[in-house]
Amino acid sequence: MNEEMTTQQIYDQEYIPYSIKWGRLTSLIGVAASFFPVVILSFVFKVVPALDAIAAAATIRISACLVYYFIEPISFQPVLGIPGTYMAFLSGNLSNLRVPCSSVAQQAAGVEEGTPEGAVLSTIGVAVSIVVNLAILTLGVFLGSQIIALIPESVVNALVYLVPALYGAMLMQMILYAPKIALIAVPLSIITLAISKTGIFDSSMAILISVFGSIIIGRFLMKTGWLDDQK
Image 1 (cartoon, rainbow, N blue to C red):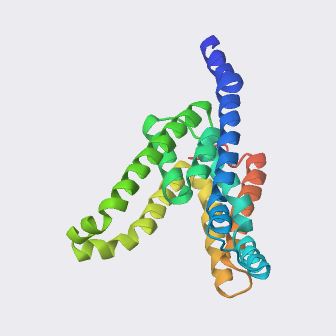
Image 2: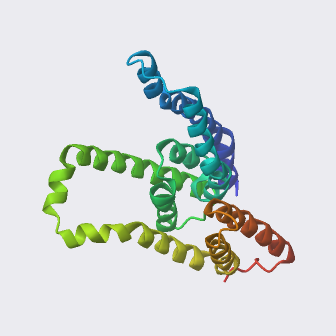
């Protein structure tokens, strides 16, 4: 018991504060770095768009992506943990790479998501995915066209199914991990997505309803004790 308490204290008092400190710093650096191309275009090449064009582009971007600023941190953080969340949001490719790698790393180690052990394994999984991702991207930049030319056309055409297959594997993993929650989240997602196809609201609103609706319903059922035994 003493060892478990010591581990928890190290996690709470050293690991998490350290991660938050450097996570905030690197995130702010990333925000500043994202404006470097704009600064170079404006001050070096003297390319400055009109204010109405900037306002129009900003409005479109905000209206299309604002909902994800709330959805993604809330829905991904329980899997990624605090350190993994900082790393994943800074490096990008969350849903199709960082979250799956985090989840698989925790599952392979036999730890539970949302625990200190899970957060540590998530950090390792995200870190490895970033290193491998950068290595493959670097290779692809220099040798991408040559490598693709060597791959059969049928294989190249099949790559469009890679992301749907990845999401399907993640869905089945979550269903097996928490089948009762899946009974809520999956039908709710299907219903809201079907309604969005009618034009009543867009797909981003469907995601918002699915995520927060699942949380609210799941929280209510947890209080009733229905979710105590996930099996």
